[in-house]
Image (cartoon, rainbow, N blue to C red):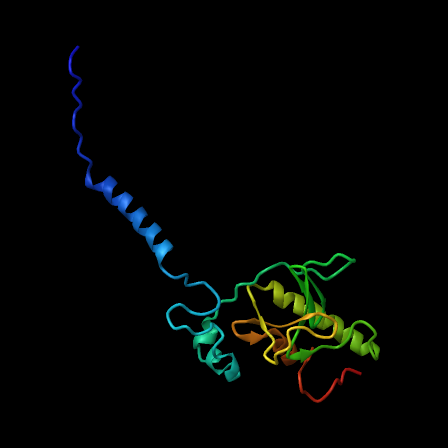
Length: 188
């Protein structure tokens, strides 16, 4: 029997460079911090909403709050029926991923037992508008800045915001809500 000879092939620079690019990209994704992660920023240790207490001045100026990462997103229909997972109850209450949430920092007109027909009409408008705002794209849910995590009805107390702005304040600017500590409910 004869000896089998293999011809030695040289690998060119192109296949090696393609493999190198893929290996480099894989290592970069694996080892570098996630720029889209919420919570503490890996490079500064600051929260994405660190300037939320400045009244939104940093967001209007294009500062860090404007670049915050809104990571929550879902489709919100109006709540209907006994089983509720993700839906809008009224202008300041939602269900999200099976948890009932009272959005804080504002009040909207009542749709259940309103004091007058005008309050019911405004409450229904606020409900539809909150649904539009939540369905418009990614948003954030942040802890209640006043401290309490749950209210007496066992609803989670959270702030819903987009780009650092409380969605309830959008409703207030449109006349469909009032900020907490306002003049009082003047719906009728």
